[in-house]
Amino acid sequence: MELDHLSGHISCSISPEPIDSTVHRRSLPLTGSAGGFVCFEGLVRNVNHGKSVFRLDYEVYEVLALKEMRRIAAQAMTDFQLFSVRMWHRSGSLCIGETAVYIDVLSRHRAEAFRGCRFVIDAIKQRVPIWKKEYYDDGTVTWSQCHEHTIEPAL
Amino acid sequence: MTMSVKIRYFALLKDLVGHSEESLLVPTGSTAGDLYLKLAGKYAFPLALTDVRVAVNDEFTTASHPLKANDFIVFIPPVAGG
Image 1 (cartoon, rainbow over the protein chains, first blue to last red):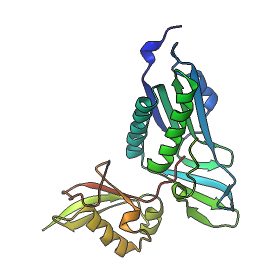
Image 2: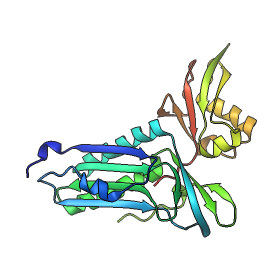
Image 3: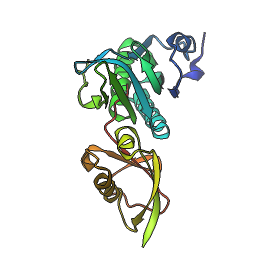
């Protein structure tokens, strides 16, 4: 199957509906040259900064969020020689275990795919205007500022 | 001389203001940073100007950005997507 004309594919979306990764996996813009596929899903966790969370709301500045997501995708395509970068980020109210963000990338080899996907999720956390309101079991509610707290060491 | 600009609030700032959009008259020649300081005083924003990013007309810019009539301004508190 030769589908190289599809290389250079970028897709960025804000989804008010639940993210179904199996649907996205089936719509992967495959190219015969791609040897690496890496996908990352960020899930809603039940604890943040030591407090029990039972749900959260994502609020999105959608016009600028989409612009910034496309810039991140274009930068990843160039810096890691990727064939495709796709990302979906949820908006609205989410329960524990739901997918908050889905990212996938295609590349010639696995190393670029791992690094490119890692770059995209880190850049989303740092740059895209999306906010998270956390609802705790103790009845309190706060707007998280997790970009200051959750930067993990690079691979 | 004054001019009208539109401001949209998100997240923490929206909760403090109590609504998501408003139009305000600002002195001609104001910068985005001038506007933020005025709003931060009015609504008791807990974030310093250096803690927020500035967007004018749906594009990132700096606090020193000179405002024009009918500009659409968003002050972006620390983000937490992903």
